[in-house]
Length: 176
Image (cartoon, rainbow, N blue to C red; front, top):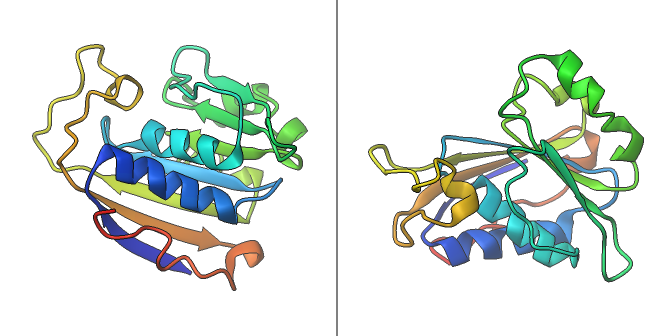
């Protein structure tokens, strides 16, 4: 199953994350791909709100991974930024398998590195228009410096048995 939607604002990207969170359960792996400033961390912030985790959810670029415990009795959010990881061995050193079954694991920049963690996963590809300038700290996802009125194209694809009968269309509401 897959859905392709246009998301028009930062608030809409966070709202999409909240809607995705309603579909997520312990053991789910979400792989986020897209250029700098596409909205990966913004989407993850919405997932964190939807899961009711302790925040704030910020980019784990320098710490690589953060665990956000649930405040509502749900699964924790494990938020990973694999941007600085170059090999599968470095991903294995994070020992994500240890928490995979009881957490929702969201990995930014993990394409080609984390697919082996689970055959069942959501792959979310975010596209921002070319020529957009990243924020002053070089990490527009984290800083919230992305223009609020530049629409992103979001493609959500469910892979594996877990997602085969789950309707993803309408998860993102156009321009919402």
